[in-house]
Length: 177
Ligand SMILES: Cc1cc2nc3c(=O)[nH]c(=O)nc-3n(C[C@H](O)[C@H](O)[C@H](O)COP(=O)(O)O)c2cc1C
Image 1 (cartoon, helix red, strand yellow):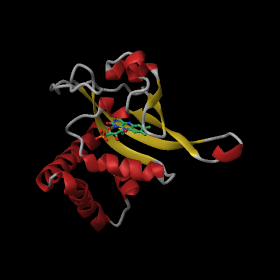
Image 2 (tube, helix red, strand yellow):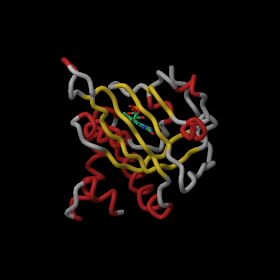
Image 3 (cartoon, protein in one colour):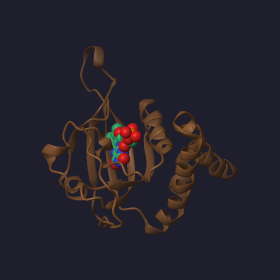
């Protein structure tokens, strides 16, 4: 069971050469995390493995971002996004995440199928966090106003209304911020 962590206003900042790496099964349960993941999350490897990846989900993150993440990776594509994560002690850390499907290399029925996902996260540019943070706040507010059933549509619309006039798609927009 996921324990509810109360967020505190304390930031942990990634170092220039840090990579936070994790792997999950096809349902998003952790099957691997590197030492830097363990350090930033504040959990032990034993506490992390087999848990859902939402163990580091921060309440400031809009649901519609994760909806987009899952839609993208389930359809076989890679996802890029700025993510605010929570640590065991309630502090937060921003990452630039790249999430990709992991394909079976075996023969037989599973050949070429998605058997899980990987994510590698690096230190985001703080100037870009300043741009994305208010967008996420607007998305979250729209989700809360819309209520559970319509939250994803409402949050996604806020993002689409920002991106569409630029003529870019989500990925181009995020990487060009
Ligand atoms: C490989 C992979 C990496 C992920 N990394 C994160 C992450 O760093 N932070 C996070 O909050 N969710 C991450 N997620 C998404 C979570 O699975 C989950 O959808 C999200 O935390 C929202 O939680 P909820 O569905 O319970 O609302 C990742 C998913 C996958 C497949």
